[in-house]
Length: 117
View 1: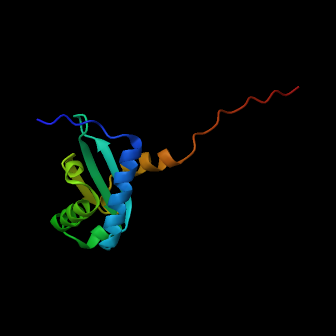
View 2 (view 1 turned 180 degrees about the vertical axis):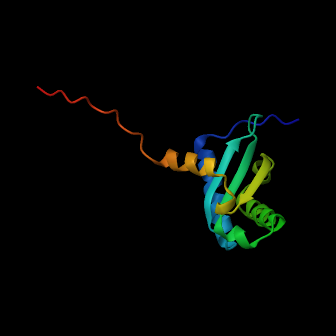
View 3 (view 1 turned 60 degrees about the horizontal axis):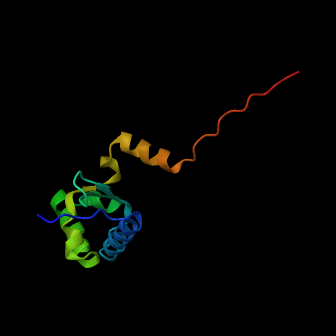
């Protein structure tokens, strides 16, 4: 069995952008492309969310992603993917949308006590 080294955050960003660009060439505008660790070092779960998936069957969505991966990534990197999700925005669970929105929102500053004399 091959022991994979985990990708750096820069390498993950490069892979995600490469996939996003390859999907765009195939007419798929991805709102999100995420790679998250899948337990074993160097293995990842891939999720792609796109409005363009609304009109496609799930198997067709996966086929488009697979073809885009072949265009964008080396074979060794393609083998790192253990699970792929291809979702339309309406299929993303509400809890994931809240997490995603809160990740983009700045953290609230602590309130200052007002001393009145």
